[in-house]
Length: 453
Ligand SMILES: *Cc1c(COP(=O)(O)O)cnc(C)c1O
Image 1: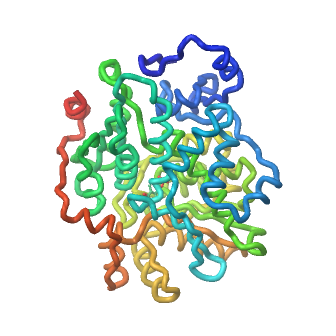
Image 2: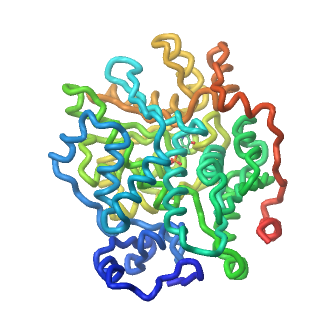
Image 3: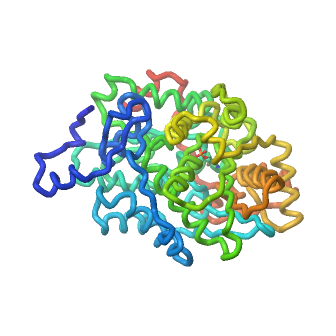
């Protein structure tokens, strides 16, 4: 176990001893015998052996729990599910505060057409679903570091949306610095503004390379003994378990919002890149959420669909697509999915079917759905919609796809597809006039270290 000066386990009081006996532990996907508390797992992000943290038990909730979710608000659902998971790790009031202060934006289930709904997760401050995990994680980390003296640096690689969600979640939080790495020229102009205009405790590094290069740099930084002896690094990528857990809240909420009579068989389609979002859904299903099946939708970066088909997992370099937040060639949460299903491809394939969507299909879908229904999709939502639509040709069910980003965030792609102007929300419009502040670096650890010094 790595002891850091700021993750002190004080001489336990009797209350802490009580807690130590009952606390839920998190193990590493590389070693089930490595145990960490929630606090340790959240602060470290990744286990010392490079594995990802998983809860040692996933609480199963009874049918009555689910019946009682119907008609509740998102906060109420989040609190009930969150309390089932965290009751041994924090006080009730603290959990309530964290949820109230991080997840107070609407997440409506909107009907697109008969039998198909969009769970719109893009009404938070950065207009993408990553606000949910990033804001919750920021508050949870703040909660755990409340009494620590040393500054913590959150290091985050982003293909666009993660970085801005994390940066907004942590903006102005005392004792925490955020360093964002993003691939130069590979995020949309508005995304770049969201990453580079905040100032305060947020620094943006523009990396001359791909998203995979950024992710590799972060991994190298965590593995660098000299650097870690000097500064307290933590991660906010979707590998942090605190990002994943709150995402399972909205799967429960989505299900609870499906009208009675349509909820016999619910299929949820998840536009996927690093597969954190899908993993959160699979954890919700393991808890007992009555979702019949998940559809994993990808763009041309289809290593997971290939795995489900062939049993071979072959990571490769990512390719650029219109749904660029899903351009991931080596999905980091694959290890968690494998862990959840005991490395059994057949078992995973029972719960998850998958489908890869090409860019021309994405554009055509944005245009076709707008014309036919009046609903405007963003490119990621379009991938999800089309994959779901294909699945529903094979089986009758009620379909939900996750609306992961606001169409205005990908305005160039959406306007090119529809030939019509997209209305830009004020939160984005005001960014156009702000000045970009970023440092350009080559994808080498030494350059990153210079900025962290
Ligand atoms: C990050 C992101 C995804 C992919 O989510 P994962 O959890 O990485 O699979 C999908 N859509 C949008 C808009 C995103 O920002």
